[in-house]
Image (tube, rainbow, N blue to C red; front, side, top):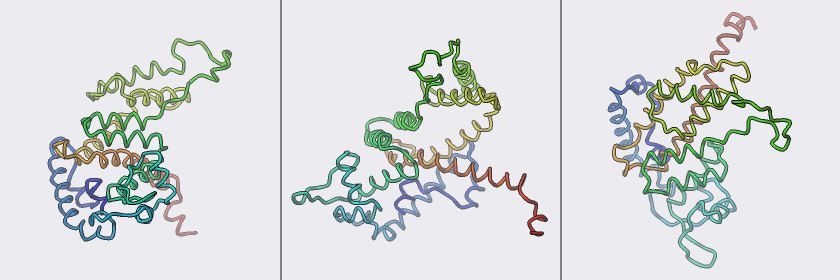
Length: 288
């Protein structure tokens, strides 16, 4: 229940999905539905979280944190040493009490390193962005994007071997791909900073596809852009109107975990259509 409240109480009901289409004219409906879901969840949260260490406010020992977070005591101590987890309130030599905020932080770290498959350096950057309460939400999301976008490897061969580097006006075609991406973004009417890591990452993808002889015209990605825009609107409508009230940890968690969910759904959709297009027909299955 705690995670449902943290993540804005996402709707999974088929009727809800049919009721609401994410369009500029219907986003208020999304907010209303999410608000109702939040109220329902908060009403039931006290009962469901009594045994979760989150609503009682009672102090916890590190063994309690381990049991409720699913992380070993050694791992929790490591996070404390690395300052990914704030220290508890000292009670005796080498002993401290912890509270629900420590448990929330541990669950957040576990989500980032587990489902999100992020290394601890990236997790540290995300936690720092979350804790920087003075930065506005656009800066928070920019920091998250900088963390999640990996730096592209060099397109040339080993740098130590000059013979491996072939002189060219545009090695790998990345420059042309970047120009095409910039034009594509402009045609979409998106307000994206020139130094946004998304531009460079998309350009690297285009350049790699072209080197492989694959479909690589930006127009091919128009449906991807349409879907991305609708998903972004749907996700950001989970944020409150006043960013001061926004749960920064929930916002970052959604960005990381929704990305994993989207990749999983896309692959399952591919499996579904591959089965229909190339798998055995129903008649063939019945004859087996």
